[in-house]
Image (cartoon, rainbow, N blue to C red; front, side, top):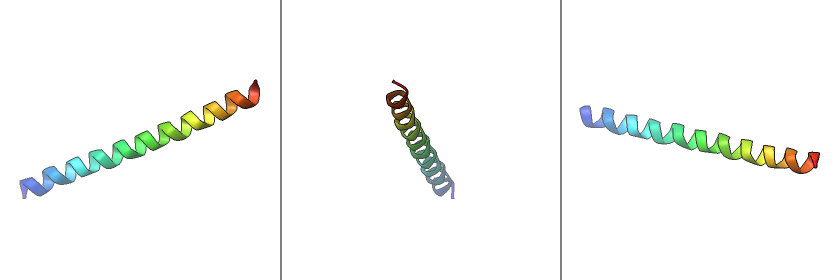
Length: 39
């Protein structure tokens, strides 16, 4: 039972990290696009 709980926590962390990187990537693309548009 402890092992599944540990695995679940790591899975959640990986999922959260993926979402965080995805949001960072989207924000990076948007800021590049805005910078190109304002120049």
